[in-house]
Amino acid sequence: MANPNVEVKYTKLFINNKFVDAVSGKTFPSINPATGKVIAQVAEGDKADIDFAVAAAKEAFKRGSEYRKLDASARGKLLWKLADLFERDINILANLEALDNGKPFQKAIFDVYGCVATFRYFAGWCDKACGKTVPVDGGNFAYTRKEPVGIVGQIIPWNYPLLMLAWKWAPVLATGCVSVLKPAEQTPLSALHACNLAVEAGIPAGVLNVVNGYGPTAGGAITSHPEITKVAFTGSTEVGRIIAKAAADSNLKKVSLELGGKSPLVVMDDVEISEAAKIAHEACFENHGQCCCAGTRTFVHEKIFDAFVAESTRLARERKVGSPFDASVQQGPQVDDESFTKVLSYIESGKKEGAKLQVGGNRIGNCGYFIEPTVFSDVTDNMFIAKEEIFGPVQSILKFKTLDEAIERANATTYGLAAGILTHNLENALIFSNAVEAGSVWVNCFLAITPQTPFGGYKQSGLGRECGEEGMELYQETKTVSIKLPINH
Ligand code: ADP
Image (cartoon, rainbow, N blue to C red):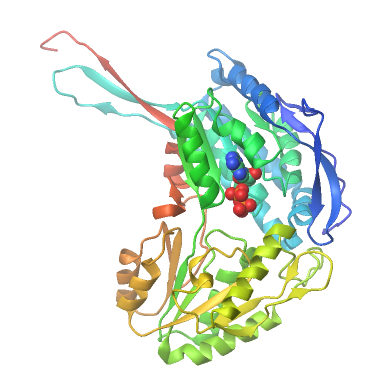
């Protein structure tokens, strides 16, 4: 049940399976984006707290520790138990998420189910991380082992706070690593409830640690820590670049990055227009447009352009914006003042550069960070709104004539996270899927993200793939063992 008065029980740092104050004693406010008011004061970690968390993680990862002695299948059971507890507490988790992030409660419920599915998927991998025996030259007996990479630093964003936590924790447990995770400063709350569930699930102390705080301080202490051997980051391309540099300058820790996007969705002229417009609408407006793989460049064939724009405008006009706790609402507020202001400035730039504003473009009300679902048509490739990641409820519709032209323009971006095509022509779907430079391609659908399929970006959308079998590899080292045998054996 949706409950805007959900109790906020946990506000401290989570280190070594205990909730503790920050060493500095500092706290920071978590703001409700629907009202602009403070929900709670949360412990603000920085370098000293990250050092404590790393020490706890190191102890948990020590050879012979309780955690290291667990059978791989026992780690699978822990993940499965965590999934059960997420399912049990789904209402609490979803209410905290809706309150802190502003996404509609029903949408937050869907996200928690995504966490449950992720934990269960990775639970199955725990005892299947097999090496190989290798028929090497020279007669030695050689085999490979898949080993945990060690102490992992994980930095996550605010758009899917719980789901991104699940995408980070699941492979940690599946591979036998240990983690120090920093949530985004905008959304510190739901992760802390998840920590409480990790204790209840029986995950040994020090395996999962969560330190809330700001990017340059707590986040910076993770990326430059000499004992963290890998950092996994989801967030903006700008910060991804800072993280890769800090990782290289400190101890050359391994880096995986899931960054921004400006994903194209190509709509061919053989589609059923109302159905296609609906897919394109959700592709763009999902999570208030705060989605790294949102389909923000809608390329529409010239033959159906006008009718498609009219239908998209109608859908945006009818999209209900309001309280995350109102069951009929599809879109809540943007996450914070900074993001809200940035989105409105992109809308202004679209108007100035000559895109045609079909609907929206304004703030709604005068409290909270609500923005009207906005559609621009007649957008051209050189406009800011066609090039930059807006991260808000703004759809840009562009016209094209041929599939080749659409592919070329779809690829003319520094990003490469996702792409989609809507068509009944299988040949065109395959030509597009092969040619487009993106980590995920969706045909006649969009945002088809599952724990079973690898997700990540080409070009400046990232490094590495999360989820699927590839998601395990990010957290593993491969060790080759060669054993000399007597000749003639
Ligand atoms: P967004 O632009 O969507 O807010 P960011 O990339 O700024 O996303 O933030 C994603 C995560 O990265 C957050 O947890 C944030 O605190 C963290 N972060 C921001 N700056 C840094 C930094 N310099 N070093 C490490 N982490 C950072």
